[in-house]
Length: 488
Ligand code: BES
Ligand code: MG
Ligand code: ZN
Image (cartoon, rainbow, N blue to C red; front, side, top):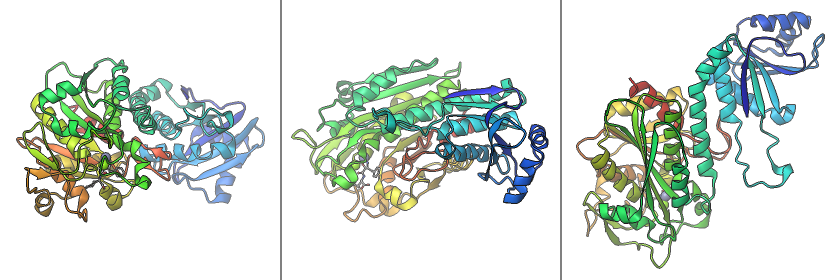
């Protein structure tokens, strides 16, 4: 989709979207248009009781005394960034109704123009790659957006970093949408190696090297698969100094069949999304590098496929993690924590981060508890958890802190090893038990947040600025976190 910012002027033909703030007068050009149409705009607003609330829409067809086909009056409420982005979402939902393939927008300010463009980008997405028949291809996508705004160069400047985040989100969504016969550890790693962005370097650690590092927990998960397990390290050096990095770890189970603790097919057929954490970290690293964030950051991806076979690990096997702690694998479907625990140890010992965030589609329990819009977070650091909660509110990617400790820890006790990988058969407190497992691998109080995105990585119904399917949830959230707390 093409995005253009142009100087404020009225188009001669086609359609025009006029952004209107709640209970505020029309912009000067809006007034000009109102005069030209002998008050059609203000009259229709009166008739419809339109006040400019976010998402309110009036469709004025063939307005008098202009050559325009249509004027759409679109409410942006209080004109906050989120409201403007969501107003753009409203338009994207109307594309088919109004048969739009390109839109002209009249913005009042440059900030509004940039946020509207960003909102259009976030909403104007569909994964169409595998539809070969024309009639099934997206007629529901815009081809271009032209936004008239007071100072186009200023709007562009505001939009540039937003565009970087949108690009990151598209990458995350694409990777999650891709089926597991296309995205498996090697092809995921190849995708990363193909990223050619200034300041971003990519390193792939293969299974043999991981074995030498002692990453027995991660390797155990992948041993039933025909695909080799890999770890990818994405380093972004955005600062001149050698300040220790902020680390982002991602669960990248490219397909989770459950392993020998096989899933029923009702819950297996969505498990291509189980690399959502790794996809989010990848999208985030791209966003940070493309907007040249003033931070040193590192992304660590654990890429494995969890499959049953004669080589697969068995329920009751004991593996030794890189930390040296032993784990009794009582349920091969609780594999994400086995991948992450070795990533945590590797990251702390080799990369010495000043803070660590892990993202994982870790538990069905968090989906049941919090649904598809809110991620569960767990942390050993109140300040970091509070900052992340705040960032989630700003970006409308909310998080909710859930507890650890006590019973959740006791449930992990094993009769034969240092711990087992699941709690009891009833799966009580499942999201907290999983987080508690990870906490056993945190060394020297490294500030850490675990983000369970099993609910938020995918949306069945669609959400504002998140079309149905892979959401890209987490890129905005962590980009905001970086911007507010690590770039100073
Ligand atoms: N990948 C799943 C969690 C999941 C569920 C992700 C739904 C996305 C949507 C994870 O590996 C898993 O199977 N977890 C088990 C843990 C249990 C066996 C202790 C679960 O949540 O049931
Ligand atoms: Mg599983
Ligand atoms: Zn899984």
